[in-house]
Amino acid sequence: MNIDLYQVDAFASQPFEGNPAAVCPLEAWLDDALLQAIATENNLSETAFLCRLNPVITCAGLPLRWKWICGHATLAAAWVIFNALGDSAETLQFQTRSGQLSVKREGDELAMDFPAKTLEPLAMHAEVAAAFGGIDIEELLISDDIVVVVNNAALIESLATDMQQLKQLPGRAW
Image (cartoon, rainbow, N blue to C red; front, side):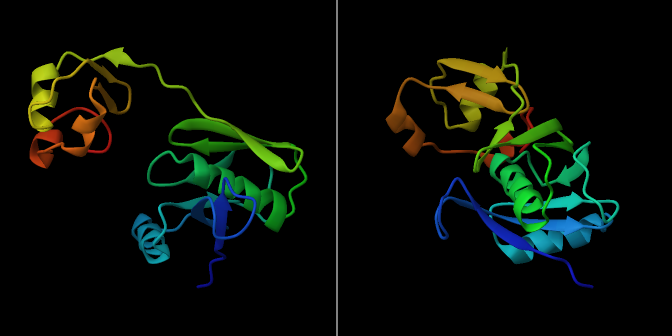
């Protein structure tokens, strides 16, 4: 099996700068275990998989997958479609687990409409503080992830994180 792979440095104007991502255009979805093996082999922060479903790329909802929502991998996928695969559309619409993401051309650059998340107060101060070694929490919020606001930047460097307690908290990455 041959799979095309593009390595794109997002947020950069020249090679070896920016934030690298791998992009694999697929004709059909592969097994999740194989996708994970490909991503692991790439050894980059993110590998984006896009499925053309047919030989012609359209801009009306192209499926795109990555492990977590990832802006630089989405931009890298759009760059591959626009530049390496030759799509002439002005805007691409990607269908993802995080909803629809659009990337449009703005001259020689790409602009992405990243979805905004609404943060809600989270009433688990004691549990979250304990998971981070008893820190003083200024504010605690949640959307997909927990956002912990502290008033001491040095505190971040000295966190004593209890991963088992973190796994008991709500949020997506535990």
